Length: 237
Ligand SMILES: [Zn+2]
Image (tube, rainbow, N blue to C red; front, top):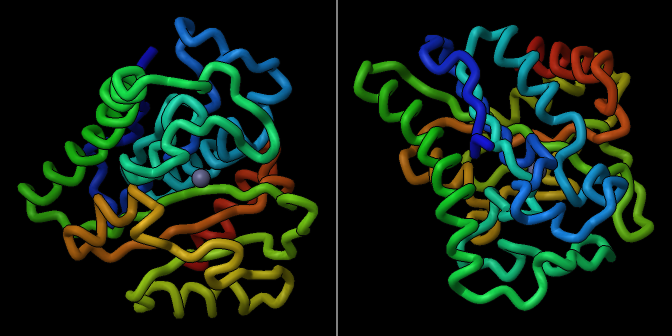
């Protein structure tokens, strides 16, 4: 089972897309982490719809995209390596049987087999572009559950940012201009270098322009919604 999938690695768009929570696959030896299929299918297993949106964006812009190919419950590729929920024991009220009482060596094994190869694949694309003198804007694609712990989320799409708002502010304005959708600005999540891994490691560390976007999962559960929202985002971008 590959740790990642790369689309259009040599494409020369300014944009490079990454999708940390694209997949809910669990390596066979981990036996679904002891979870029934309906638990792996919900938002705790992956960012529902995000892979489809990323694929449309990669095609639309003719841009590279790197997608993680394992569930965030195996190892969360958007968490710092010392995070308590790097390998979550509980997620949104669901106990993860296969993640209970893991030794440091067992966690490290997941990091080596699934976390590092995915991030190395992102590195490989970025380093090749640096060497070729190609400018990069990194776009991290996520999706969010429509409600968490009983709190509904009105935002259909949301941008998460840290200090640099040079791309965020005009993109928020463009997304809001039609006036028909609710757009979040650091709601429900801000970009936090103490929690997030991908954007801080690949973009902030290099000083690359970057964006982090969340699509609400009920809007992008099917292929039609994925395409419509990807194109709405692409036009605004
Ligand atoms: Zn995510």
